[in-house]
Amino acid sequence: MVDPRVKKAAEILVNYSTQPKKGEYVVINGEINAAPLIMEVYKLVLKRGAFPITHISIPGMSYNYFKMASEFQLKKFPELSMEETKKASVFINIYGSNNTRELTSINPNKMSIRQKVLEPLKYERLKKRWVLYEFPTDALAQEADMSLEEFEDFVYNATNIDWKKESKKMHKVYNVMSKGNEVRITHNDTDLKFNIKGRKFVIADGSYNMPDGEIFTAPVDNSANGYIQFSFPSIYLGREVDGMRLEFKNGEVVKASAKKNEHLLKSLIKMDQGSKRLGEFGIGLNYNIKKNIKQILFDEKIGGTIHLALGSAYKECNGINKSGLHWDMIKDLRNGGKVYLDGKLVHKNGKWL
Image (cartoon, rainbow, N blue to C red; front, side):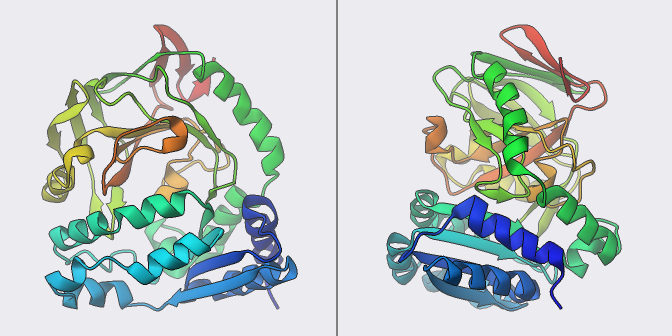
């Protein structure tokens, strides 16, 4: 018997987040551990008269690809995937990790090469209706220091909510932030300014990520000045970077350090011209998520936090920075942090004033 919470999650992904129309192609990318949710999504897509196309990965595929792929294979652009992407209208990506550290021993340069090659595919998919979901698995529960049962409760509490009601709450913050030009963030070892003039905030109310609960924009490319110490570890392609600190001058990272995997941090910043600039400024507004679990889909939504991403900016924010990288890093403001908008304090200790 299928967990009713899984059915509810599927209904949100299909009937709220993406809303496939009759005759549309819907690509369902999933990991085999998430089979129960994939099946429920598959059935709902069929009920709506759309055509589901499934791509299911099994444990070890990513590891063996990066371990065995030659430079010729890494640099080969996937033309077939691009053709599918152009013809599809909806992408539903359902993750269900079997091993969150599968790629730890892989040379980060190989992953950087592949990410750069896939950049045009990424931008094409961003034109479509899409949503991401992190299905609860033992591996993710272990990463979060929870039992599987506890983690399932954590996930469904963050996703299976009234998103129309949450959207109304997020609009209040959107209305405040959309009126400003300069953002300043202060906290322990943090004093960073950047400009958002001419950029647009987007309300993330369940249409793209699940869980969702943030508003985000793209900082003006050359405007970031100052320094910031991030609060939580960040996982990039299976490798954990912790204790990250960045310094900016005229929009570019001029100094970067980390307590763990500093080499990876510096390598990714050098990926291309756009990877040393900020592509996103986001504000976490899902107050059902209260702790970090080393999964960015959840951590960036924590109510009372902000996050910054190095690399590519979203066009819907009027962002122009391009990069093969988009890497989110989170700052917890719930204990002394402050956000100023045009010199006025608008956010303190994780709460809106």
